[in-house]
Length: 336
Image (cartoon, rainbow, N blue to C red):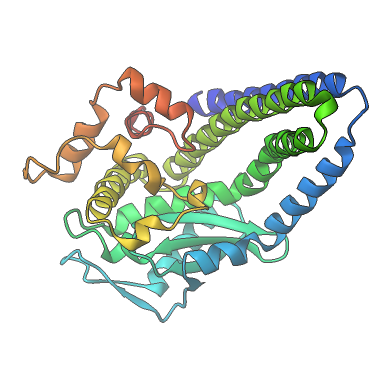
């Protein structure tokens, strides 16, 4: 029932995006009155998005130092009970979840950055891919990762592949990108055409405001698809809800430690929407555990976050975020 409700919410958000886009574009075109060639903007943005869609994996891999993971690879782990994670185990885990979900096995990659995370990406040219970072396995000394948590995190990323989230979000962000480009081009146009600069600027700002509104809807769609990927992990990984809860809080805590240390890898951004947890907003989810020095068990850590009261400010900040609030995610994963 919860899965059906989430699916209907996603469809409703997509319908809202299409409806608002139609309304805003109609208003802008009416204001322009055929005096501006909007098709040039659409083609220009379309070409840029197409290149980003096709060659995006190469941009991602260069920025996040990604290479293909081999079955013979061994990654050292901070958890003394595990010591290392083998490429063979990761491949077997991916294949098992894919078999459960009746989906093709994507290419498995390894990102050599210290930020604990995982992400899914791909394109028609390079195929579907998932990546885990070095930091996920060997960068969480205060909260060492466990194999079952890595399994659930992999399940979440495979959910994005199964649901074609990269393709859906690429199409969704195309609409506000057109309005943003149109708005900026009209601002430049008003600088060189003083005859009707006031009217042109009004249309430009209307386009930019419209782009902002559509951007908020796109972010809402992204958050719902994150929830959907969480549910995929819960469905196709044994005890996936509990495992993913524990993995998520460890990632958020460890990202905050890196941020406080001003680690250089925390400055890498541009594709953070792909991540299971957005490093740019990890500090917004933090419950003040760092200062207490109290060692909590995995479940106590989850409960600490799950019981946190979400402030009005945090609700507002979530509207601008690509990922759901950690407290909401944990509670959704914990529901039966």
